Image 1 (cartoon, rainbow, N blue to C red):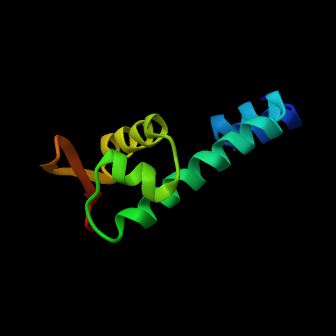
Image 2: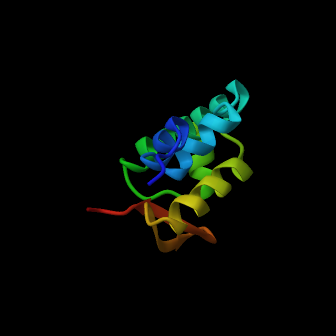
Length: 100
């Protein structure tokens, strides 16, 4: 019975993502900063929506972000179940935080 090399034993006990990160050297500082900024924007949007439902233009104004940026994040948050659509206001959909 042959014994596995030490490196193979280490990899076998670790998840695929951990192995990939080890092989590629992890995330670049630029990529880390990008994800950090994405999380910051979502946090700002959540905080603004705590006061009640808002439209995309209202969110953009409240968060001092460009409307396309807000729209992109709202659609992503909606897709992953963080936000729900409500009624319309001045031709725009109202978005609110999903309770629970």
